[in-house]
Length: 358
Image (cartoon, rainbow, N blue to C red; front, side, top):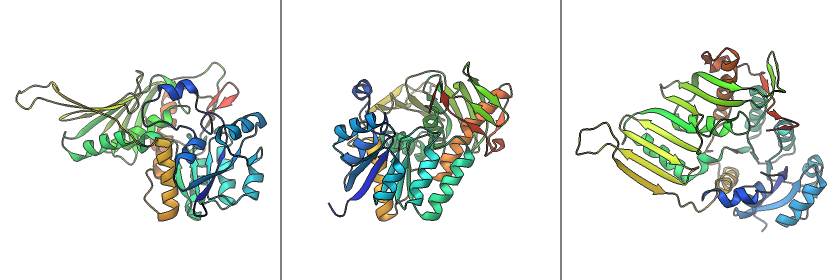
């Protein structure tokens, strides 16, 4: 018990402490536990020592659900009173940067944060500068890169067995920029093998109550479709189609990760027939032992203990945010190509839907 790392969750809502029953029932293998508290409790050598939420009602319910008696309605009091190794942040985006900065100042050794990290690239850079200078471990809530079947798809893609990668196509449906698309931007970067995107074009729909000003958008707009050109020539497509799948199109075949990691489909041309069709198909079903969130939490532990290489870098998080913001700026330019490097660091998208933020 004494050699366990101590952890606390700040923000005990859907991602922090309560997975909706219907979601938990329908999720593929490799996704549950899918809230911070449950993932910490499932992880080895980490003790869930405290919970914090501004709602007394939510906090009491989370305390009862996860059997954690040390609770705080003010996370600052918790950070002052408890010596914590790990803090996980599952709040809304508008307050997330401030909380992370205060956790760093309190001397934590590791931070796990939900996406999106911030409302601007500038805010994200400030956080990463502090994490880097303090030597604090970091994991991030873009969970698919922590799932084995996505890792297998990337390994096969990079092996050269199916030739050169041409296109990465992600189908998450028409969905909100900051609520869902950080996952998509991360998948595009993860599979493309590129360090950055050159330009994007996008079709975006703003809410009726959006507020658009110079350098500022108060909204979480819906992205209907987008095209991304990466520096290495790989094309990324954000589809309007649903299904939560990723298709990798290569010169000698296709790889599809289907239904949010439920299976891996590998398609090749028949070796005995000269044809452009991919007749030979292999399906590998996913059999994960741990959930993506648990893997992320355990990686955070391992970064603290043994300084392992993180699954995601600070620059990848920033580049994904630039990519998404460029999609919106393309729409504001009438759908024209927008250079990702031209996204201002201080350009803010609030991620607001009604009275809530992503």
